[in-house]
Length: 179
Image (cartoon, rainbow, N blue to C red):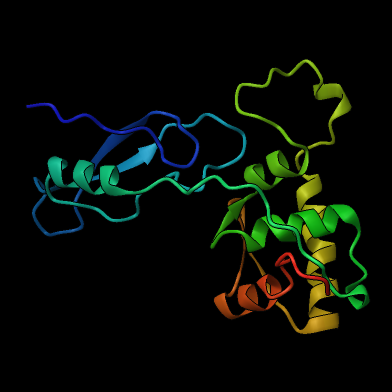
């Protein structure tokens, strides 16, 4: 019986099972893990399931149970003037605050309104993807100095705010009432 492996819930790319030697004294023992096969330059947030399983079917079942993040429009925020954020920095912060973890590629796509399937026809007009790390460096300094908020980096993967800091940032969401 062949089980179907669902595509990556984060980027939609196909996924595959990886088999490797298990970390046991038995040289015949194997472990299985499922990961995203995305060939994107940016690492997919769901690139690899770090949990290993002794049975292939268990690895596939665990992968297939993962839920895709719900795609919602970014909320409007009114950040304090003292933070001195540029429009781009504010958008990057809104994206990072909108989820527990945001990959560089996801932030770039939201910042520059890139849709899945867009061609590279206007690539010459777009900033290079490393611009996100420039915005994050500036944001980290500004947030740390002005509000004691830490913006954390997972090298080569993306960015996140601690849950308590996300709560602080999300406290500036516009709720429809006059401020």
